[in-house]
Image 1 (tube, helix red, strand yellow):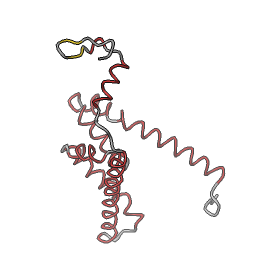
Image 2 (cartoon, one colour; image 1 turned 45 degrees about the vertical axis):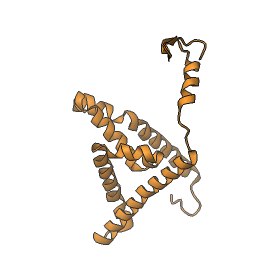
Image 3 (cartoon, one colour; image 1 turned 180 degrees about the horizontal axis):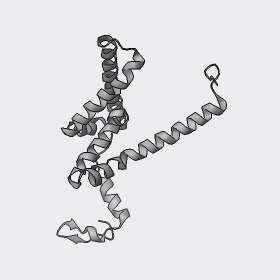
Length: 167
């Protein structure tokens, strides 16, 4: 038993545990994680989402006589709609528990984070609840993406790419 813990009828008093002692107890009871299994599941589920996106894009090309470039935007929109519907029904989170990062990395994960935040704060109203809280998690992704795109554009503008840069 940790030094700071008091035993009350076979139970620890959490009030007297230090942070380090609590961490030691928690690590003993934490189930082991299989890194290989988690990576494999993330790869398979993430690849499955990308495969679905590719199938949707090919459908747009074949059925609506679009070019691959023209089909890109509607494909992303369909994936976002599917993600929002699955999040609203509570299915996306169950899939994410199994798939891990495989569902977080594609655009569907971004849509899930925004939709789940909107659903969580809906009771607080549309402006102060949904509007104010929807971008809490997703906002950092938007900022990072914007800043990264700026620096990539800056590097491209200064150095260019051989054979690709057209002033």
